[in-house]
Length: 302
Image (cartoon, helix red, strand yellow):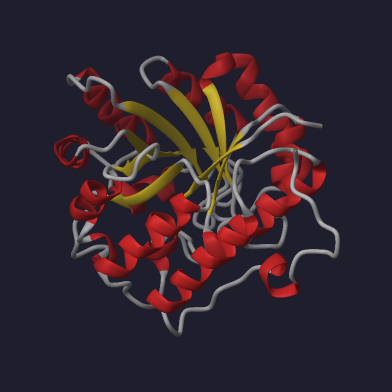
């Protein structure tokens, strides 16, 4: 198995938005620089949301400008609406992700819009001139919701198909960690049959300990783009109990030990982890691989 996978580090956005402590701007820059040095070629560095709602994202414009100076790095930002998208364009983000929840209750809590209204909001953004900027539609709570409970699969397929009409790519997100491997395979397969190559990424959480199992299931279903967060930081502030993204260090180790190249150097990734811990003292940081160390004789995928 030598196929390469692409990993987008979402810790500076998804991780920090739900952290108990605020990371200083300069510490964010140091962390992002170390992540890029480890081989990560795509980093979601922040979101353009009102600072009063998520204070940790108040410096996103400055962080985007800084990250753009790192050669070879795709700088991603999240935007929840037209105003956020305009700010992302002004800052110079290379890629903008829009969260479109398949759960009506979560959508109204998260962005104050119904899923249908959010689809139209993204459509309006896509109609604005945005040369060279990629637009991703992320179907959040695609596998269940802490507010609504079950999310009908037909709704996930419908929303993904609508976004595929005007987005460059579509991701499916297990925002609250409800998914299991069988569900991952089934829903990714259904959506792929509907929108083909437009279905690109899996954004998974480890809330109930199934993050890596779900990532492997998605890989076996043909997914080659994954979001993850260093130290397992993350969660949605507007979805109770939504903790912990898939841990970047463990995800990289899993793929590399399988012979699947990620382009990321684990030792340098562990160094980036140290910069995270230094910049966010007192925050719980997780990761089996960095805690246990690499196995004796371990070799990364060639």
